[in-house]
Length: 262
Image 1 (tube, one colour):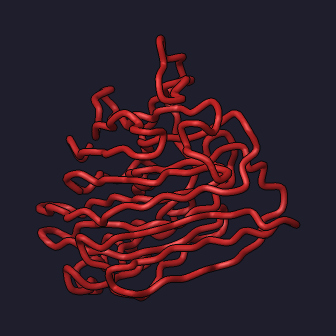
Image 2 (cartoon, rainbow, N blue to C red):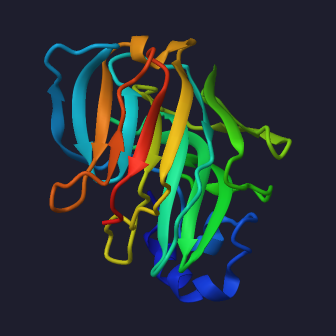
């Protein structure tokens, strides 16, 4: 993801430009851009006696969740409840999103929400990105406990439709964009520790507690039935899990629970 040019300036201006803790903010305000491809560690390994459509398990420094990776995908969708951030100390970041591509390609079409930390303050907002173009944040209010529905759909001729709805606050957006050559080789529902620090590393993962994700679908069917589904585990530089990812219940629902920032 193309955040390196913005992160240093953003860190320096973070406190002065921050919105109220439970209001809305922009990714630019936080000094980085949500989204972008996975940073895999090694290759995915087969899961013995796999159940619920899970065939592989992979480790990543920035993603956790589930991805369908062995087909061509035209749609992905899921719902989640915006978790409550617990914040202290330095700036930290957590993103929750649905998307096409990014697992085995350098493009991603995605939309989701964030809870980020500025010291002891939690900042919430929603955004979309057609990477490698920059991400864009929505100005609408997002608060912890809000219910989100989101989808990304390929509509043909290099066009994508990105939908996100905060049904608690009563707003939604459908954003369209184009990207030539997107392979649509994966569909994913992801918790992310965004990239990048000034030196190119993964940013600290904000303490989001537990996020519950339901209704995960790809190509109109349960994600777990979409073929070749991979469970992704987020790890730090020492190989420790940064969050836990539950099994994929009914092929559609799972929870992720924060463990550590770095």
